[in-house]
Length: 123
Image 1 (cartoon, rainbow, N blue to C red):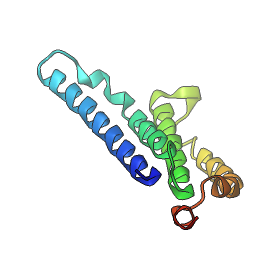
Image 2 (image 1 turned 90 degrees about the horizontal axis):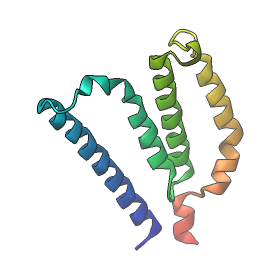
Image 3 (image 1 turned 120 degrees about the horizontal axis):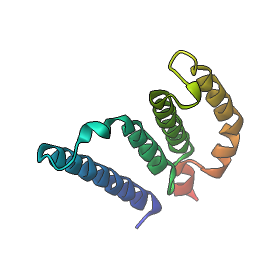
């Protein structure tokens, strides 16, 4: 089995587990076993899980970078919704400029670390 195939299967399995978990929460809420309204403020953490899932394994440089952006956006949304360190949508937008700068600085390092899949196929 190729590494790209196993990477795609792992991503599919991860999304399946996330859907099972979300479905279970909805089912338990409908059965009055759990109050799901208390859990809604954790929804940005699903973006964090998706981003981590995208960065693990054998991603391309673009997939890895996109995964880092998802992790950042998920943590940012969670921090803003929780008011962490006084962050709001209005005062936290400069974090995106900082993250963009970090991406530009780390871009060449990431590109060397994660060669494109076409290069892997020809090697």
